[in-house]
Length: 195
Length: 203
Image (tube, rainbow over all chains, first blue to last red; front, side, top):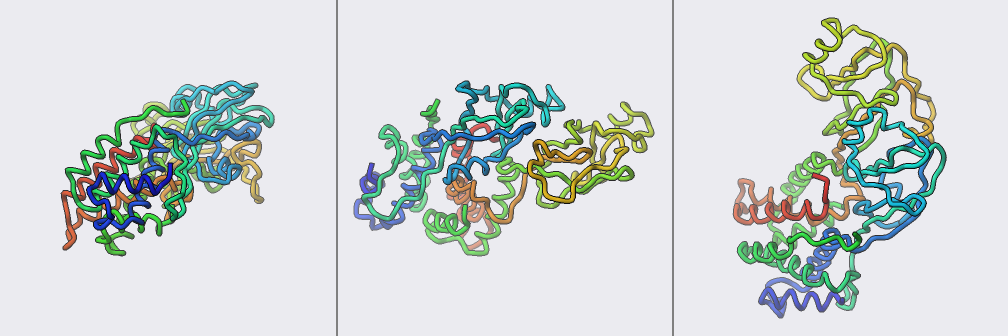
């Protein structure tokens, strides 16, 4: 979908087709950010990469994955070892059950868990170097200023992007009732596309 | 999450009504709130532990302590009353491998290991290749804590819009000629509605 078309649609929805109340470039910026947020909500842009587990190590930083991808990562979606998905758990549950979890090692990891926004646990740690695959939700790159720039998102999320961008334009115009109406549509939970 | 991009969003959404001073002040507040949401957790090995000292002060940039480890073990947090019940009235002078920690005085930043370590930590003088793996230092204290950063880390780039909405919610609620309580509420509602959708499982 072209960003110029989305901008036209948002301006039409906000009853300002000529962009007199809100400059077109401002609407483009808001549409761009709405698309990034919808990508986060729907987990739309997921990429898979190989990642090396170190011996006896359970904690890793997403920065280490970002380094191999070369693009910002929002969150980890899944981890696979030898084609098998590890179970996603809660690190606090693991810590309650095993006070030695930080250095626990075993033949094969079976659980992973996020630790805050940037760390993740792979438990138990392998005794030697092991390859795994990480599925990460990547951040959409900022779009160019051309109306022809493509928003790299599935067509079925178009309505959600428009709803959110509409709410942002009404925020700028200080129309709280319209903001709430658009936000209500935009924030209905959306099933993650990668699941 | 460069501050300039957040500033641009604040200007577009708030029609350039937020001053530079209000932006900077409220951005710091929002980043502190992100620390409370565990947006960025760090694993840090603290300074060497000597057999005679059982207390240490956590660095200022750590805003929430999530876990304390000694050697391989995650230590349990116990109150002074619980420590008296477990170790007896002389709990402060017991020596051995620590299995618990407590806080000292009024600040949660000062932590005391119980029992007092009976051997020095083995922190090497050269940087470690894998401090959380094969090079994990023996007899050292490691903490997991939320970090307050002065500059927004690049990995939080996807929180640009949430941060801008949160800054606007605070800035428009302040006592100033630009005060707009209704719009401050709208920005706050939007930030609260969006966070769990874009950062599931983080609250």
